[in-house]
Structure formats: C-alpha cells, structure tokens
Amino acid sequence: MDSDSPPQDLVADVFARDCTSRAAFEDVTSKWASLVLLALGEGAIRFNALRRRVEGVSEKMLAQTLQTLERDGMVLREVVTAIPPRVEYELTPLGVRVSGQLQGLAELLEASVPQVQTARQAYADR
Image (cartoon, rainbow, N blue to C red; front, side, top):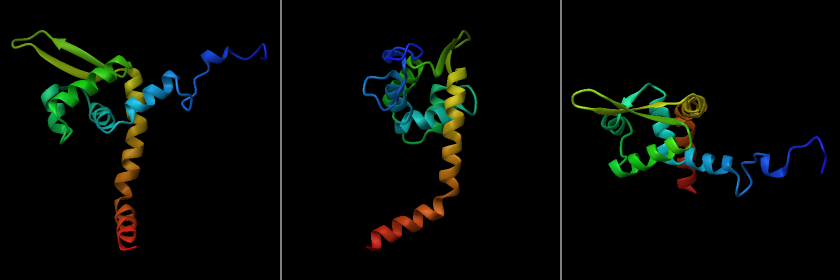
C-alpha cells in the first residue's frame, strides 16, 4: 500500500457494499426520500403539509422516511414550542446540497416528459 494513500476503510466508494456512502445513496434515492428532499428544498414545513405536498405517501412511510433522512444528517426535526406545539422539518446544509442535485434531475425529467412518453409508446407498440 502506498504510504500517501489513506487506509482502505477510509476511502468512500458508493459501489462498495459496506460503504456508508452507498447506504446513504440508497436512502436518498428511494422514491419517497427523493420527493421529501425536493419538497423540503422549498422550505421548512410541518408534517401534514409535507404529506399533502408529496401526494400518495402514507403517514407511516413519511414518518419512516423523515427518520431515515434525519439519521443520515439531511433533515432537521424541530419541535416548535407554541400552543398547540408543532413539529417542523427542514433541510440541514447537507440536505440542501443533496436536494439541489435532485432538483436538477427533477427538472431534467420534467422537461423530458414528451420524450419519455414517446419512448414508452414505442416500447408498448413492439
């Protein structure tokens, strides 16, 4: 091993089965997590408003997704002391960076809807 290279266990590699980056990648790229990160990219939001924004997500799945993203350091859960008390979710600095990358992908896909529809129809016609 080269003396200038870091120990193998310190090298992040998303293709390595046991690498933390791979686990975080899997968490972020799940359907609900990606949509939650995109929605939180619009600003801090309460649980029920987030559930309405991400159409189709169940309460249980949203709670699990938020816990996973909080564990990975991308989402901050803040209990607001008010009457009645409420909980808001917002992105951490890491979450902002990840959400920004996802936003670019979302914009590309939204702009490509006609191409995707054409490809899907061609595939169905085969």
